[in-house]
Length: 533
Image (tube, rainbow, N blue to C red; front, side, top):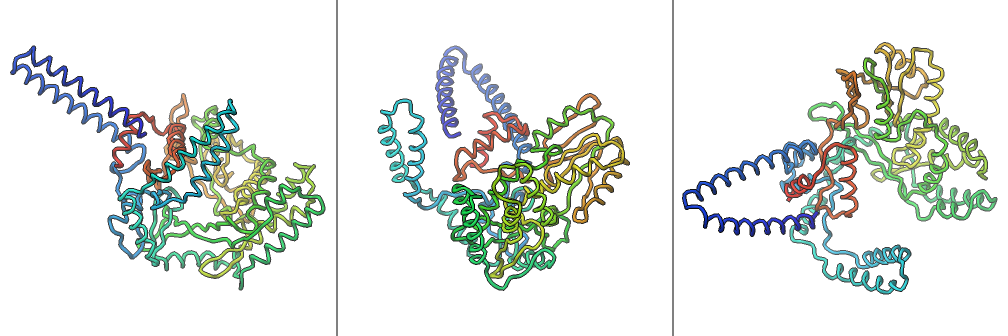
């Protein structure tokens, strides 16, 4: 982007030079009155065209981000529900989101040199002329040392870092991202703690533990894995990958559900997330995911938005009735024992060459799910039912449970024909002949399992949102789909000046292009960049 702007600036300077030459020539041809009239007319036309250009691209940028103003204000992305007021400087930093990165005051030389060594290791394998390996090392070494020696944070970055340190000193507030959409939420710590305690005090889902069981559970898993390796049921690679060392307890945190209805001064409910990275059973859970994922029934699943749109484009939907079903709290409500039995059964049937027995698989799944403990405010808890959101196994087991049961439900349904059925985790899109048929099916699936409860959203004016797509069924000749933005959408994206890998910034633009949410031309990107200066 910087090089593109530099190129345009060079072209601009060249055009100024050409204009000055033409002005001199015209002055020699026209008298002073005619030249004055021509100059005023051209100036008026240029000013008018520039204003129209800026207006057009500001409109495009607003459609892209849905911000009320460009540049956007902190009111559009920061929600302060705490009793503490934030300064303008603090809000102007927080408004870019919690993933926005500021250049650090100093960098670790060892990390930089390690990265360049990895680059050299990768590039050396692709050299056509191996004699150039020495030159490659010299060039990369020069780049690394130049980067380290010339690294200097700007005064603006240092000021932002000081402001962030001021925010961190305030222990009476917590700063989170919302459950839906992107943005920043500021809460009083007391309100946040009460909201989390309200969740983990549910004795049907959680149980307090007197002391930290990390070491004892890590030891039991180590002994189990050593036995499986000794029996020849685990190869060395798998054993090394899942063998736990130096484990830490999981941490629970909550994401505020701003989209839920609440009182004017009340705290929003939270979605509990158990961060299991670094726990004793985290790598085991990832291994079991790899074993189970290929065997999950997927014939009624939509893998992403793009496949869903492709599937419905071939349908004749005009005059039909659209609905979507959503499972209430799927992750915490799926029965764990039933899910483990299903997982063991699917893996055993789908992978007959696996050396692990069904009993051993069941033991591993139990360790990876039922024996997950976490820490909150110095106290330890066990989750005794459901699957913890944050575990690698959570979406996999949820997909298995729904995929297994929906196949049976669809086969045994005795009502009228279901014209189309696609599910993405806990959201399902269905097409029926009439609203009556949709209600009959809704009542049917709500009676199939005691742990599962669905909610239903009906089409309105022949339109229905699903995932991030709005399906428009008004045209008898063709089905229209467009990008759907929920009410929680803030338009907050990774800022170009974030201290983030360039590949992420390019990937963001490619994603927007692929979604067809906007047609991104160079001038629009330039306008976006300038608006955020």
